[in-house]
Amino acid sequence: MRRKPKELTNETATARLRQAGLRPTRQRNELAKLLFRNGHRHLTAEALHGEAVAEGIKVSLATVYNTLHQFTQAGLLLQVVVDPTRSYFDTNTVYHQHFYHEDEGILTDIPGPDIAVDGLPTPPPGTEIKRVDVVVRVRKH
Amino acid sequence: MRRKPKELTNETATARLRQAGLRPTRQRNELAKLLFRNGHRHLTAEALHGEAVAEGIKVSLATVYNTLHQFTQAGLLLQVVVDPTRSYFDTNTVYHQHFYHEDEGILTDIPGPDIAVDGLPTPPPGTEIKRVDVVVRVRKH
DNA sequence: CAACAGTTTAGAATTATTCTAAATACCTGA
DNA sequence: TCAGGTATTTAGAATAATTCTAAACTGTTG
Image (cartoon, rainbow over all chains, first blue to last red; front, side):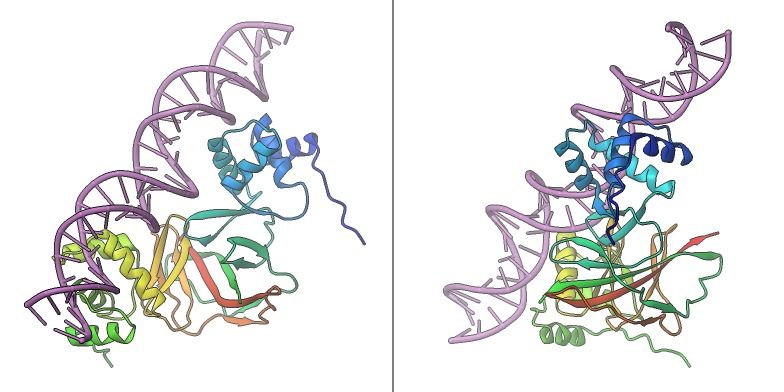
């Protein structure tokens, strides 16, 4: 059983952007295509920008930052905090958990079933739980 | 039942530092006293520096950073990553979990029993699990 | 107490990220 | 199809946390 690598067409990208209430500009389209082309991805702003440049896409770093944040707000991406020096963005917005490879600075999905998260605490008065992050930090041994 | 606020004496601080293999300098002693004086604390480097300055302790920001990292390596502190712009340090080095108040940027311990973390995954080949972080992100509603 | 290694420090440097204000591109209505 | 207005993009400056550097200083040991 092979997973078809869903190469995002321009039209699909455009549609997704409109749905999200974002004007489908050239840059947003191209970034969306990079981000959502095959499987789930975990990348930093600089990494995405580098990739775009490598593929000959003309887009500024500022726009990459803007776009990543807009996509995050629109629910197309998840921002993941595991490294105090940079932010990762995850194209898989369904609840799941991560391995963070501290040596390499690489974030990956934990395959298989989630770690059971049981007995959620009641949040402090006046607050509500926004999300529960589980990060398994690993290192080469 | 009241918890005695264990004001750290200079001697105790010195002893702790020696045990940790750190030369007990004036700065490290004073920072240790601030950090470990009552209950568990969660603070950023800038916050600790501000506190030190407020109490008339002469110490540079660079030293605060150095000290926090040395304490962390020595196992006296835990570094917690919840905010992409700054690092928090936790004086409670026993396993526990956190609420992160996204509005205020405040980190607190989750009171009561830990969230059950069951079914830890096998780490990717060549790696070992270093730690499992559970962060419950909350927001004012 | 001399001498050396470990520490501290101010300030410069670095890094990720955000801001700014000007230029440009998308979209709508006529 | 185009004008006009608003959203978007952008280069470069600005910011913020953190690290680095090299010189001054301090704790320890013989």
